[in-house]
Length: 205
Ligand SMILES: [Zn+2]
Image 1 (cartoon, protein in one colour):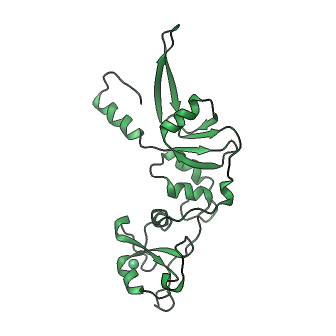
Image 2 (cartoon, rainbow, N blue to C red):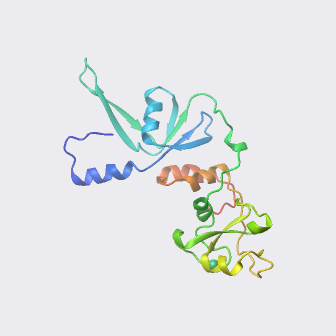
Image 3 (cartoon, rainbow, N blue to C red):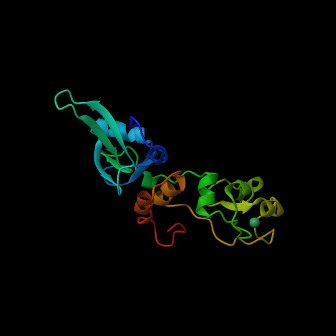
């Protein structure tokens, strides 16, 4: 953490807000690997594991020790995108994105798949398109955002049986989309970096 001796109140607020942004960790070829904390990014930088960085400007400048000879304090600029040296252990492009309700709501832009109305996250549920009682699994292809009214009206029926056709279709997010859906606090430049790599026709682009 940066240690300002006497920060102005406004400065303090700004630097606190900045600390919430996550860092997008890539492998050396630019494939997203995970969201990491700024502290973890600083650790990679300190051990010289970072091949290159990207982003409009640093998320934070961390201050280290004083050089005994020059008397200058070392600083570490934490960029929002860091690519680590070495090959990634896992090729995430071959791993399907893991389902979560929060990601599904964002994929569906917080709209109910039956009435198309937009809701707050707390008012949305996940509907099993093929009901769980019929063996329908919770997945990106069988899950759709639904308001509680529509969800309880549909009950354990398929959309066809309930005469409630889907107003949009579910899909499995691409790897880059998955990172947008999973990110809690994505700064504008990092969002742009990911969005520019989305497949054509993505709902998020
Ligand atoms: Zn609805």
